[in-house]
Length: 484
Image 1: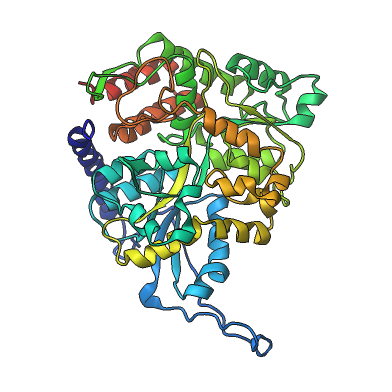
Image 2: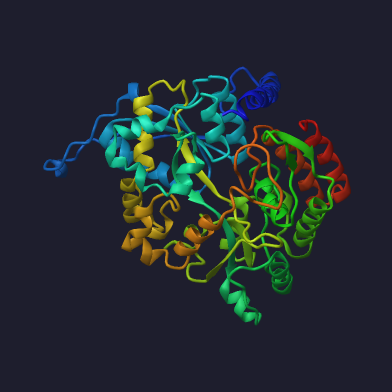
């Protein structure tokens, strides 16, 4: 590798040390009866397969749940994950006998818990949900199973059907370390009827200045002009803001010749301009309580008609256009806004990985291969209340060739693919970046801590409790701690 392995392992150990300290403090403050799961975790176990009724005598008898083959799965708490949890008993457990115990976690908490558990060789989870930031780095550190070995024994899983950019983003040196459940870029979602009523036109590929002008024009007491993430976390506020930073010509750090972290760049004019723009747009036309809002909060506001536009993950389009969505048919979609770069949308996948210390890797793969298969996508399309528009997007070429999906997702399917293909993962800004490729994050382990601590400062600026100057000064100090 090995430009990240030696430094990267040390950095991950530093991150794990910080997280372990937090865990010890939390444990010291808790009761003896406190559960292992964090306070915002929600556990759900798939129930036993029902016994056949008298009317089922001619049908195949469901499998008996084998508790010895149960697995524990940590996943992010969002609508797509809630969907698969609701379908697991009938579509997986009933036929395999494998009980699946889900633990739902908020994005930031999931990342912290998984990093601590997997990196320390813990045995809390048999399957963990991670993304393109973690998969190549965890894989390079030897923390995860190489899924190519399992895939070679499961030809029906059809690894070649996975969209190449997604497969590459979850791999390191040819080894696939996580199977994508859904993949995404970022783009603008907007109420076409609101824009039309205002006599405005949304460009297919707007600049940030154009988008801000539209947001301010349609902002009202009843409906905010735009929803933007403001909740602290490198994958929450950090994700959306970093795409703005990139296209404004800024960066978190310079890259040294060997790809390691160079001088911190938070005190540069481009960084200041990006943060001032982001904070000011939220102040002028953003949602209330923006400092506590991320994907789920903006989704709720948009569905409730409380915001006119939303810049976020393309996966949201399927939720907005689902059969059970209150805004179905009212939406338009545009590419991620730019300033000085040709493209700015991120590239991400929420994916399922098997830690090296999983209690039964073969059973874990049986679940992973089902949850990320074409079979699951087809079953979800026929079963979910939201219909075909709500199936996990962005992972398999077969999804986009399916006539059912083409019809249900006509408003956004091609735009999602266009956004993913345009995502500048290898060259997201105007200067080289340290570490592995990434758009809305810097592909070094240090970014997990630095990005989270800095976005706490940025979120405070959004809330108006500190100035942008103070947030930038604090973040420059934080980012400089890991510079070389």
